[in-house]
Figure 1 (cartoon, rainbow over the protein chains, first blue to last red):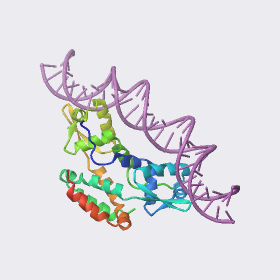
Figure 2 (figure 1 turned 45 degrees about the vertical axis):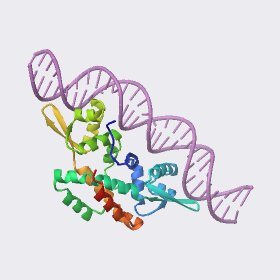
Figure 3 (figure 1 turned 135 degrees about the vertical axis):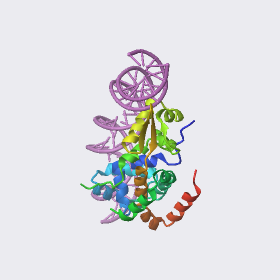
Length: 114
Length: 114
DNA sequence: AGAGAATATTCCTGTCAAGGGATATTAAAA
DNA sequence: TTTTAATATCCCTTGACAGGAATATTCTCT
């Protein structure tokens, strides 16, 4: 064998690569929401919302908390930790190669909070 | 309108979500390589390597440097910076919500330098 | 138990992207 | 200019996946 694609979980990336799912993730930044709330705010139909949430769920990006009739979906930390860790493993390489990465990052993280 | 999927470029994610392309990215960690070298080390055929490199190129993940007959592909910093920035924008949220994110991250980034 | 809300699942269909193979392009060397 | 190496592109087929619509499931409340 010859192609071991690092520790980064591919399914996390492909799950996030779908626009609607990305929208869901962005939406859940502000806290847990039910399926209908999600579907409504992103104006997609409920079944599609459920399907996308299922994918996100299967990849550990969200978790469910059943409460009466509703199901609250919330973000989970692990996949973001893993992603952060993976991206940061490139930092050393890029720092020497491009130099100003550190400053660039610091500027972005400080100023840009849209 | 209602679903603006943040500042994170979706194409970067979908480009990285493909196993072969992820392998290429991992391979290019150690420095620029030609198409044939890449194809060879990942035992894929040259045309597929070229195609994947084209996708990575179109998304700014790699850049080309022509040298005589060969074309050296190397990683670019920007997409990783953007990704890092995006992931870090979740950090605050997760820190309060999960508490131990900071320590977890610090541990990972310190120990794991494979 | 029956009605109704909230959510999940199934089936179908269309689209898009990846691999295979052949071939076109570009540049170097003879 | 013909050959040869390196790389890119084209066509075709196939598989994965997302949306649409209908339906099944689960829970709550009366």
